[in-house]
Image (cartoon, rainbow, N blue to C red):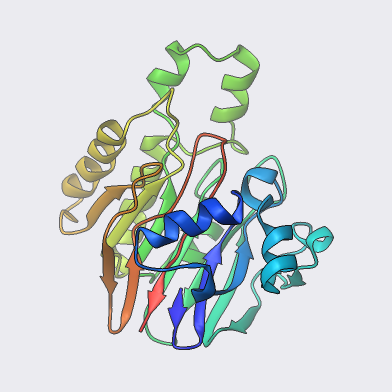
Length: 258
């Protein structure tokens, strides 16, 4: 999220040099980032944080149980804090580790993000409702997962209520959010083994059309391929992603306000 005073990065699971290279592809660099918001403590979301703090004196914000060891400023879920001229709110999501979604607002427009969650609960949907742009996990196609090469134990973990959202679950969440101002949906955290952008987008877009919300724009975040900025209200802008998925590191999300 970007204001005149700087930007916010959601998660930092790659070395700073790699994050900087990805940011350069959307016309930004690490000097534009003043703070990091952490969604959970796995190293694929946090490994770049120590270097960013040490080398760039970057502030870190996280909900309890996520970033204390990294020196993060702790923000209780459901409470708001001001970061770089924006209002940031963390909300709990169901996963097998302490994990949060994040909602960011400029007082008018809002964006929300939730990946690494086993279900889009009523509480999660309530926290995301009203956001014009949403980044939401669509990790796997259930049939592909069932027939795929993963162990039975891993399949159970992924498909559990504390695992990862399927395409169908993401579609149901999108349909629930669509009547409340949703304009752009970026589906993220797609499995390279058990999903594809075409499969995920087709499932979600089809459900939205059937529910009468075909005007919602649906795009997939694809690893290593930053996409153009999305206009969200006035004057919020959201680049669709700078994100690595598949358990190999979350480079982060950069939304923008001008």
